[in-house]
Image (cartoon, rainbow, N blue to C red; front, side, top):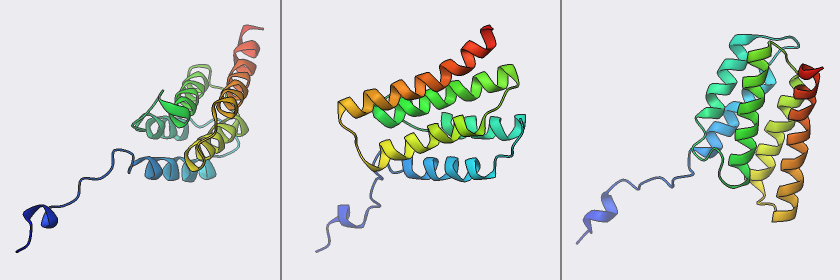
Length: 124
């Protein structure tokens, strides 16, 4: 006799979509041009906002920082592809290898420094 639960579709793990969102963000990063393009930045921000764990764990904290960076770029019509790339690479790192607390703090501090560069430039 076959158990009915065996034939039922398996419920995906709550983090199953994380890799898809990250892969999409990485693809969008690769397609970003050298100059400010509101549409491209808005699309990337929308993808980041779709990450299910924004603000939680290491990867979610990185995504929250990326989302804030993109919002700042949109508000100020500024752009730095490398600042975005640093965030997306940190996101990949956090997902692929769970860093210990000390590494996580150091990475998040570095991302905060990147964001501070633009806040300082805006204030000047």
